[in-house]
Image 1 (cartoon, each protein chain N blue to C red):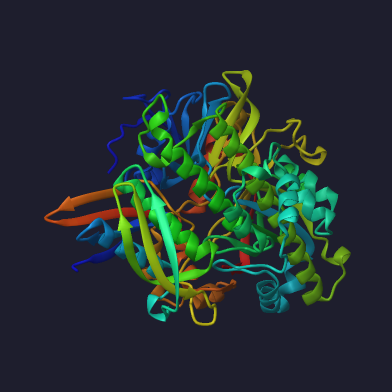
Image 2: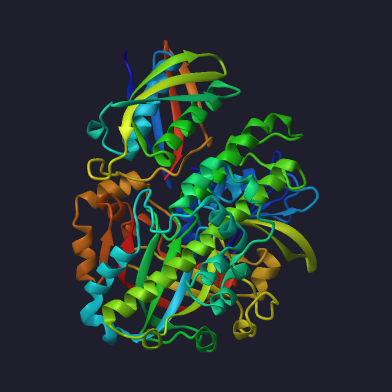
Length: 139
Length: 480
């Protein structure tokens, strides 16, 4: 699958830009990118499975709400995602399997704290069969 | 470049005339130098966006440390009518009651000069910091609910500091109307083991020396003198506050379509103050605000203990005394003034500080004649300011002033700039000992990532929104 992830600048915060061939693909990549902002993903092992579900009135809200749920998994439950696999997705809801492991301060060096995934200026565009999203993270 | 048209009012004031759906004008406080960078930022558009919200009073205000936030600009002040106005979680920010407290000591620089490294290391080990840091206080849910209701007093009751500290805390360290039932299990869980921790990002605990006094009378009232060692703490409500903001914002975004007006930005999601959502958020926000006050109260006590242990002196010898504690991310119901008329309003200060004038009944007796102490933390390596509130701020800016230096450079650019240098060594050469959990934190917080604090403070001083009392320079700092 052709995907791309990049970070863009936002004065106080951090912007996340990612692409995917489908909404499911985009959500998986966005989730990995979010994790990569918090810790080095190569240090994470896929030893346990969790399920993340989210809802939204439109694709943008669904994207933000999905990332909010994932961030709660990381910050609230100290579980670090390695791989994401969307099981089912509709216009307004998504269910995703998340493989990863509980955070271990000895092995997982923090890069930075992400306080929140914001709705500020969220965009989702389709061009030549690719979906590209931009989300601003509060650091 | 912003497409917003600005009209200059005077040396420090700029006006954005109402256009489109703006209900009131925008007023930005800045001089020519600061306006250069503000013009390039999206924050002016955000000042205009806030002016669209129902019930907004007089003007959508921006302090000179304004920079682009999400929804509301950081450095923004907006007050709303209690009946027709709204409350917005984004107008408070994720870190509810992020704030600053300043303590004086009876020590002078010579008392600690040889022990500074030890002192910073002692603070670093006594005060948990860094991403998701947890503290030794593992609260039960029942205890956490008490923190929500009592704020700083909860900490004092448990021996962290004295009742006199509450006098020296904005709102006496407790916001009324806290509703613990409005805080979700998730938020409760995140708050359980983070009380008494510093956190990460721009939060810090700093040892500073008073460098210069600008106002003798106010400095005497505040107990500040040249050469004195002081301690500043900058932190907030930790993961609990982020979770409360996040959940209420999502709830309001979901219901945005049901409002009788259009939001210019989703992140400005809000609810009428008199609606169920509005009242629920106010109750939950007060819980997080009170948690933050308890947090800073505990950290102050830990700092005092560390000074005693490392310097092998008694509490009386150290003489650590709270000057004041201010919050700079809050929505607060206050009796304020518009065109000379007193009115109860809900004022949002997002990256802005309350700055009450002399004579205000909410001030402790000791400060009643001079005004409220205002604490403006600088960035690593430049120092901080102690200001005092004014009558003009009460009349013009709902009793508000700036909150800090204001970010200039994005975190990723700062990190890149910092990564090429030995930031810690550079600071040590300037006589500043820094200890941080992550190197990225130090790099992201390099001095040039911020607006010059002198410029910001000179604008609020020049415009009369607060007056300079003292400048402190940093000598030791712990960060997340």
